Length: 357
Image 1: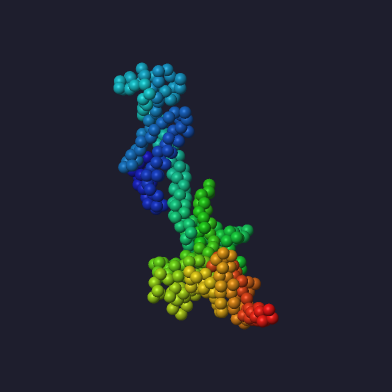
Image 2: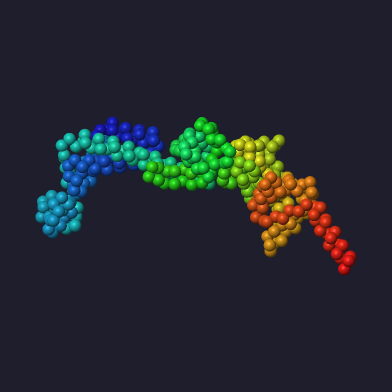
């Protein structure tokens, strides 16, 4: 090997972003492997390589014993003393060997192992990079769709969007760019596997953190999220500064902030409601855009009874119960919604009964 070989290794390390020490270690392992493969597979050997000149030296290793049983691995004390009188039992004797044509064989073997090490190092780098970004969002470009799985180009590697993490009705066309939520990074024999999601509530949370500076800075807190991906979501926000309107901060000037998120989610509707420590008021807020006449919460039963105007009943419940369902999920409370007329009728009956009694 030569100084040119060393320079090539260093250049390769810089190009791939891999520490050159890893590649030099691979070269030394390759030399050991080449020696054992082509000359003496049972011999213990050690390799020294100069990182400046590229020259290497191969040393056979044998342990000093009283009686030699394995000549390849052992040497008698009598023979060892001939090499160095300071040797004692148990020491390792090293002797340099000079096999013919070894440099050519070693270089060929080194190339294979170096490429293998580069692949391993690149995989480890990708794993480290993305494992640190679990529960975060990443930009990606759709590559292809095979058997229901969407393959996403993430730049350094490929991500997988499985069918159960896809938004119903959302189209994934080649070269389309969108944001994804990293739910898990797995180590496999073929390299890291980046599992993505478009339905996870965390995607909505991170989008708001990126879009709304007040959330990123901690002035506004995102207390809870309820999401039915592709259709509708609700978020509850709270301000740590009474001068800052949490809902207005998320909506933005002329609705631009929330609209950017809606666009990223391909038209998913988003209700932004104000969090309140009073559960009754919190539930009333969560039923937005419906108007609430009254709300009474039972801490023991964890249920909230809500009265709405008759003309607001369908809005409060929502299509197929979606609005009420999301409000219940957002607040963590069961919600019983009644129209105003039904409550008034019940009160009239009770009053009539009282008069009769």
